[in-house]
Image 1 (cartoon, helix red, strand yellow):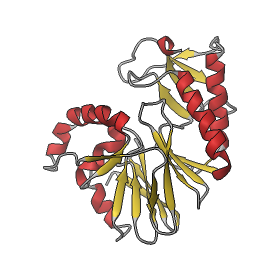
Image 2 (cartoon, rainbow, N blue to C red):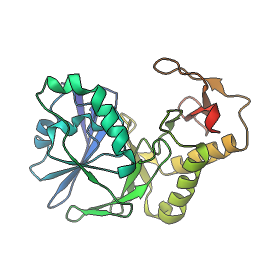
Image 3 (cartoon, rainbow, N blue to C red):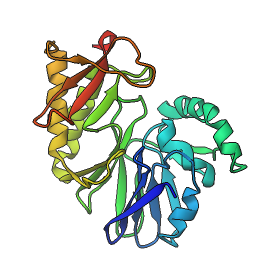
Length: 255
């Protein structure tokens, strides 16, 4: 079994997919929401059914393969329409793996910013976190003062991808989230969180400041960053107090 399950609270579970990505199962009184669906390399629906008997809604925070692969085990999933094409392109190169289960991706339903999912005693509100991708969203649980951020607000955030937007766009999103919702959450759970559990909401301030450093041209200490095939023009900018972990990876052509 790839998945490692951690019970964070009475009605909240972290599902770690072999260290490659993280999903969260939040249960209300009447319904549950699965936030992201991992790589699709084992039956996630079976895993979820072992944790709750409630009907489960799947919400993808964005369209990358390690967050949508498990959609094949469900009847439908929600995603922001700006990431539909990205998700479909990632499904295309995952097709061979899906054949092992005799399944294909479920249909999408489209999220709207401000949309609220009522689980019974607990709600999740969709907020925009575009930057890592055009359709990145966060899910705000006011009752728990908790923000689920996928990869949109991440201490080690990738902004170098072809589908990533400019640093100034991410910065603008963080400013708006701070102004509109900053007083409503104290904790963050992101799409690659593992043993550290909750992160403090101050991550938002640190990342916003890191974006400002890049926008002001403070790149003299930045270093090349290699990922996958070592794409050119890719650099890493360390920000915040934990320089071993807090990193913005960016394409110099998008500054």
